[in-house]
Image (cartoon, rainbow, N blue to C red; front, side, top):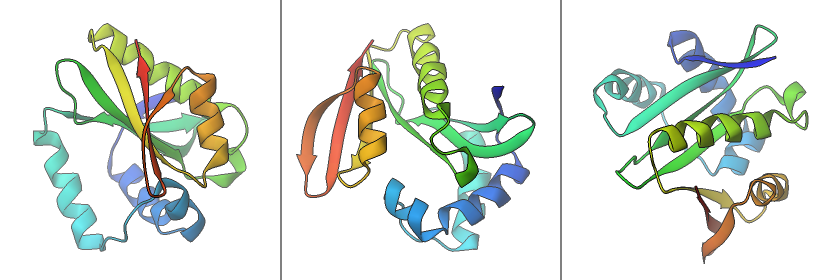
Length: 148
């Protein structure tokens, strides 16, 4: 069973390892950051009113993180990843999207958008399956949107 928990120091430390995995970093198009930059970001998120983050746990194991950022009165940007590769391809991406879509609906947002690399075919298929459509393509980055 997958559940969403408070993002805490445990998830911060695991995220450090996850985002430094070259395969995952390429898939999520993450830039390289220092540990100090990550800690500064972690200490700042409590003050942000337009940013929400959750840890993802499956069968008691922390496996990834997700959230909404750039939240406005009408939309928000989805982001998330499963850092534990043993859990890839198990349908958890759909659970994450359903959770965040329901959250956005409860907040009366009109849409959710996201960015995905053109080379991340599995993610693109997942987003299309959940109703996202391509809104814009710039170089290797695709912007997709789901109207709620």
